[in-house]
Image 1 (tube, rainbow, N blue to C red):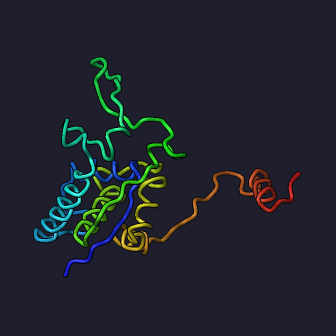
Image 2 (tube, rainbow, N blue to C red; image 1 turned 135 degrees about the vertical axis):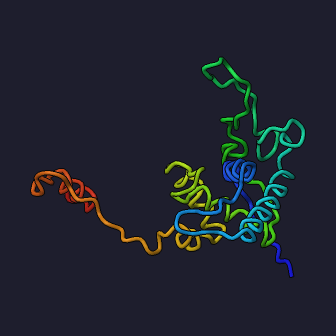
Image 3 (cartoon, rainbow, N blue to C red; image 1 turned 120 degrees about the horizontal axis):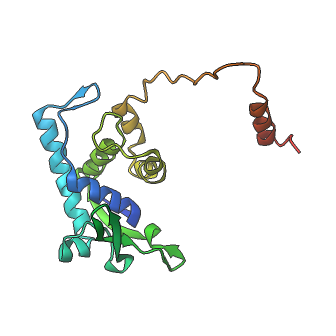
Length: 195
């Protein structure tokens, strides 16, 4: 039985998933985990389904073969500087529409459990420390973690990346351990004691 979900993705979230799905290939090994041929094939198939669902909401991808999620009106042509000179590209307009920036506009999607699984695989490949396409901390904080929460994948990602079992050590201070006056001031500010 197929279960269907409704979910609205921001253009930024959809763009990250579309770009990831566009180049996705499940590796045989990710950190300490080895995936069988069948597991990799299933993950790749689920991501293909995700790509198709996102593509259906991406008219520029359909019309001009540009990996741009969301309505055409959200995008504009731009020139990107490269060592070989300017190259035409597309970027999300920095414009407010209905009180919200285009990047935060939501696009409604219908998901089944396979498409949802494909989205989770994309999030894993973007967040796993051993991944060839690991995203930077800013992308993880601003896009991946909020999206993982919406997809109810946070605990699954922690388990897959080993974070659930990690011995999280606090980085020790170098040098004079007693000279932490700056840290004391920060604590006092947080507690509302400093002037």
